Length: 172
Ligand SMILES: CC(C)(COP(=O)(O)OP(=O)(O)OC[C@H]1O[C@@H](n2cnc3c(N)ncnc32)[C@H](O)[C@@H]1OP(=O)(O)O)[C@@H](O)C(=O)NCCC(=O)NCCS
Image 1: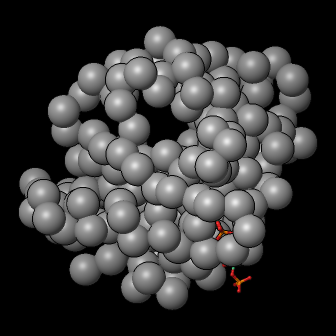
Image 2 (image 1 turned 180 degrees about the horizontal axis):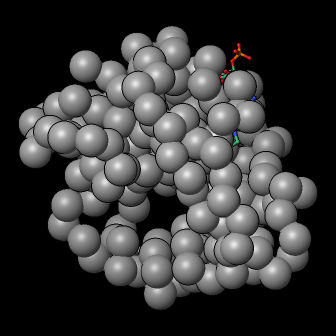
């Protein structure tokens, strides 16, 4: 069994996060978009520069899952809520991203990452907590439901020229 650790990412991890961020998004959702929309999204969401800015933001936390051989198996990020929630509470927090590479799924890494992010958000005084999830992503919705998230709204998430129908989930 490969040893797996979850740790907070540092500024030195920007390149590795850009790689795992682009790879996991493409593997999971890439088939939903024309190549130009996917490329436009990866350019605004998963370049080393974008990740470097995220890692420099003191209000945001990022976690990496690493195998003993140094391979990155997943990541998560969290911070102040940026979702379009009406009358958003001033202390609201958000799980921004939660991804595990397909070959490592089903082994509770996603749950462990989520636990780390929720513990950090709660310790920082963020409440309530929100996240956005693609309406067709029933697997992730089941996982979030087990952690007490329930649907409270919806919005359109831009991927290039395409607009995904997303649910907003809330945990009181
Ligand atoms: C969601 C995800 C992080 C869970 O990671 P994991 O290590 O497999 O999670 P765990 O082993 O702790 O939990 C397994 C649960 O994940 C969910 N899940 C399993 N496969 C999934 C998939 N392909 N996509 C989304 N969720 C999935 C299910 O709820 C599953 O439990 P269940 O089948 O018993 O209901 C991982 O499946 C993943 O990266 N999926 C693709 C990206 C994604 O959907 N991210 C969430 C974006 S909002």
